[in-house]
Amino acid sequence: MEDLLNKESVQRVVKVLSNFDASLKVEVLNSSARTAKDAATSLNCEVGAIVKSLLLRTDDNFILCLVSGDKRCSLNKVKKILNKKDVSMSNAEQVKSQTGFSIGGVSPVAHLNQIKILIDSSLSRYENVYAAAGHPNSI
Image (cartoon, rainbow, N blue to C red; front, side, top):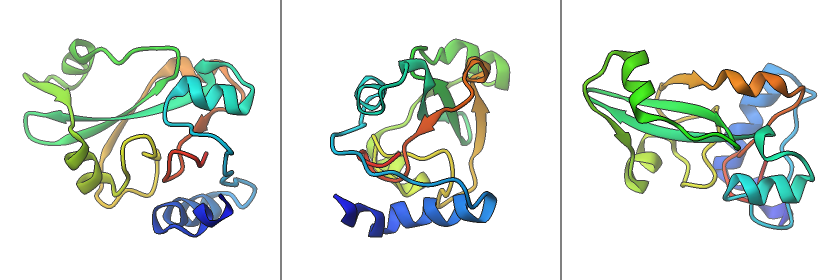
């Protein structure tokens, strides 16, 4: 599993995090963190402390929504916030081409393309939150 730290997608995240704050580290989990529930179980934390990174497609662009693991992303709310007519979930191919990550490993940082981000304010109830770091087994 430690070989995961050498994967290009994980290394992109490691680089961004270390440039921001050297104390931030990527951890490799023994089991999958593909879902918020799986990640919370592996980390022994509340599901709400897990950040779900959801790539949405709008009329003319993509947007990344960072949502607490115990919440759902309301496409109607996103439409209103962005004043967009159409908002939908991106497919696996779009996620990979826009972020450089596969579904289940989408990090909030180190995307291939510049993407606007919406952050769920309910994440602020936690002192520490955990997000995918380029692979479903890395946080």
